[in-house]
Length: 388
Image (cartoon, rainbow, N blue to C red; front, top):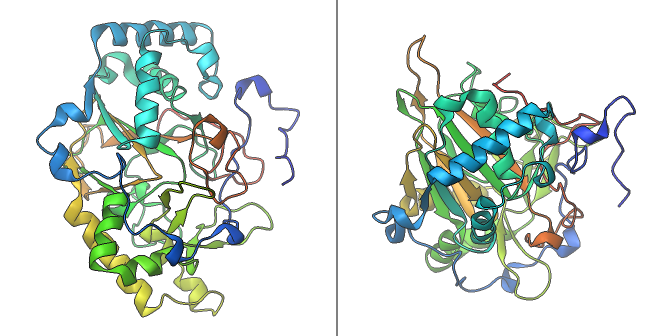
C-alpha cells in the first residue's frame, strides 16, 4: 500500500507528533475473510463476560482516581498548558505520568485482551473547566492508543452533544449529534473513550455488552443469524465522509476472524450505517437488505439488549471501551432547559496497532499507528473544545 500523503508544507508537523492522518475507512481484504465453517463453535476466555458478573459488583469495573493520581494529572496538564502546545500535539513524550502510567499499562491490556471496559470516576471537570479537562483527558488517552479522526472535519477530540439535527435523516446525520437513541454498535476505532462533562435531565444512559457472549448465545439459539453476520454481504454507508474518488459505501461483514492462528472474532457493526443506504439500493447501486439480513439485525439488537450491562455516567466519569469485542448503546435523552448546560460528553477514538499489541485485522492498515477512524482528503487533525 502506498504511503499516506504527507502534510502540506503550511502545517507544522510538530503539532501532530504521532502523524498527520488516520488511515480512515476502507473495505476489508476480501481474501482474508473466513467462511462461517472456520469460525469457532464457542468463544472462551476473559473477553466473554455476562452482565450478572458485574451488575452488583461495580468494584470489578470502576476505578476512582486517587488524590495522588489527580494531582499528577493536574500538574502535568498545567505544564502542558504553560508550554503552549496545541491539543493535537499531546503525546506520551510530552505528557509524562510516571505513576499513573503503571496503572494504565494494566488497563490497556485489560481493554485489548480482557473484558474490554472500565469506568473511571472522580475526574474534576467542574474544577478544571473544559480546556484543562480536555488536556488531562487526552493526555490520559495517549497511554491507551493513538488519536484518530472521528469525522470529516478531523476532530480528534469529539463532542457527543445534541446540536438539534434531525435523527430521522440517517443518510446524512451522525446520531451522536442528536438526542436520539443509539442502538448497539461499535465505533471506527480500537478504543472509544467518553468523558462526562454534563448530564441530561433524563436518559442518555449507557448499555454495553460482550460481543463474544452475544456470539456464543447466537451460536446456540440462532446459528443461522450468526452465519449471516459473518458473510461479506453487508453494505455500510459512509454518509458522504469520503475522499475524492472513494465510493460512498463499503461492502463488508459484521463479524471477522483475525488472520493467523488463535484467531479471535472481531465485530464491526452499526445498524444506522446499514439502514441508511436506501438511497443507493432504491437506485439499484447496492442490493437491498434481504429478509435474512433484516432478521439478523433485529435479532442481534434484541440479544444485545437482553444480555447488556447498564451504567450511568456521572459528571467526571470516563468510560473506555474496546470496539473489537464490546458493543455499546445509549438511551434517548431530554436535556435541561437553558441556561443549564446540555448533556455533553468528550469523546476519544484511539488506535492500537498490531505491532503494539492490537488485534490483527483483515485490513491493509492493521499495522499502521493511526489505523481506522474517518479521514477525508488531507484534513488535518483538530481538537475543538466544544461541539461544532
